[in-house]
Image (cartoon, rainbow, N blue to C red):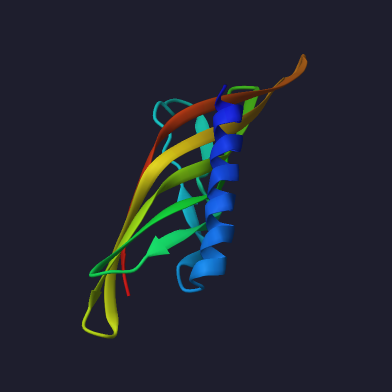
Amino acid sequence: MNKYLISLSALALAGACSSALAQDKDAFFVSAGVGQASYHVDGTTGGNHAQDNTDTAAALRLGYQWHGPVDFGVEGGYVDLGELKASLISGAVLEEATVHAKGWLLGVTGKYHIADQWLVSARGGWLHASSDVGYRVSTPAGSMNGNSSVDGEGWYAGVGAG
């Protein structure tokens, strides 16, 4: 059901954007961003553990923005939140895990211009995330590997100034 909702939302947004492009070139936007994601994992007690909890994150958003005293818009896009890598050595057992998160978003944006050269902005909306998890447990007797995927829904928000 969620895949159908995402597909219909993307088609509706694409239709709105193409008609917006024909009417007002300044109202259609494409936004790309690159930054750093940082993961926080609880419950890492005992043993010798190492964790690479930062990775590059990237987002691509497109949408339509109406101009006024406060600019208001809608956006949709894709975000890749990078990968977490962790390992734990406890005695002769080595456990390794990776988590890679990514997802689709649909939301609203707002922008307020202060004078002619400054602005503050905010965005927020719905995020459908998918996390791919891989693990490996190695012992002197052998090793075991596995993979799984987890989907979830939630909200995203952000603020900015420029």
